[in-house]
Image (cartoon, rainbow, N blue to C red; front, side):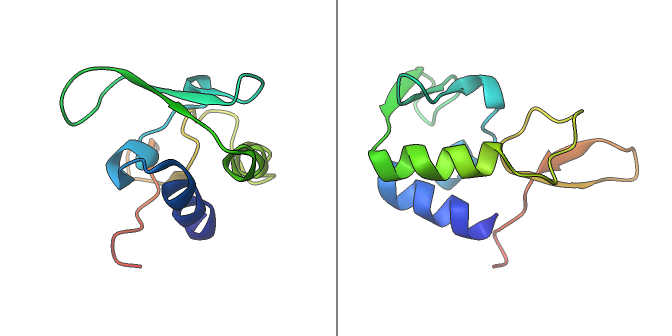
Length: 92
């Protein structure tokens, strides 16, 4: 997942916190946009996707390891409470 995250960051200019909290419903692959609801300046924005970013999102969304119960594009392991949180990439 780390490789996908880095490529999305480079291709879109999105902040890492925006990428980490992305939900599947926010990515519109057909229209090649991502709708960000919570941004640093508190106003929603739409991010256009390059052809490469669209390809990376398509790969990430088709991840065969994706559990059915998560809405996160980049998901981590479940915590003790069984809830999946965003993928932690800050140490990497």
